[in-house]
Length: 108
Image 1 (cartoon, rainbow, N blue to C red):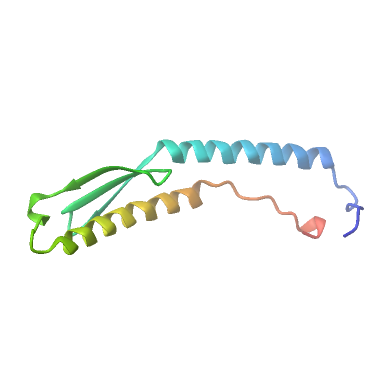
Image 2 (image 1 turned 90 degrees about the vertical axis):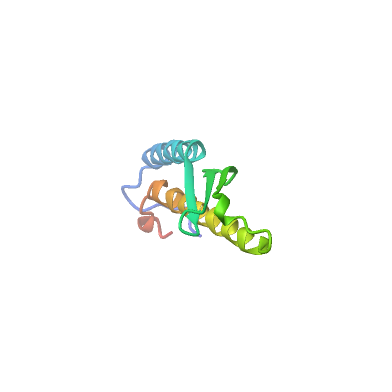
């Protein structure tokens, strides 16, 4: 790898961009951590609420979903609702991350 940079390259500008990008990423991460996401399953029989960190902070189960002869069915609904909420966390995380600058001029 060469130690030379393309003509017109300004290291100070690149460092400023990196600092701005870092601040944007920290803000996006903080916003995500403070947000909550809700997923449902079984037509709303089970609702799971997750923080942006992935922590389960709420679970609502409609009494009609509780069948003592089918505990696995309820467990499946809880997993599905939690997974639906987590998919929202992941989608929001991806959407809120700032775009990376184009570094192709540096051969990267």
